[in-house]
Image (cartoon, rainbow, N blue to C red):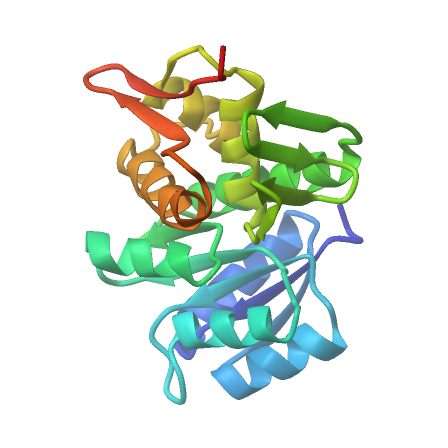
Length: 229
């Protein structure tokens, strides 16, 4: 695991040092940054595999940093650290291209589990090499490209894995627990709310370019993509 590079961005020295030491002990190659400017520079020059990014920083917030990176065509997975357990903050994180979030205070085991899950999703995405088609939806796994009705839809690795899981199980209702276990692969009780948030934002990206909503909610059960008969 020593070749996996993790950029830790936090302006609080105690959190930054704790995360850095713990991740190094776990076998990761770690660099740190204390603000947005340093974070962007490190993302460009050092090219980490994943970024652990505090939302509240002195010069710009983590959401703005992620938007800037995505605008520069840098799609490094991002794990947000946030002090506020508010749904709107979480949804904002997803809309700018984040992959997951952890609310402070957090356990180091949780950080490691979520990092490993994100990295597995990213590596799985790179390893796939086929095309999944469901109605207007086409997922080209070789090119990591999603199109709806011929329109390209940009997705983060986590969004991609969620959509793919729904697509390969078309016409099957998947529960939130099944989705959480398959997409996030947590080794502990994860939040069902994160599934709702990701499905909600996927819809915001997919529905404007589709002739009808692609993801259906089966109230009290879960979600599905219904293939055209």
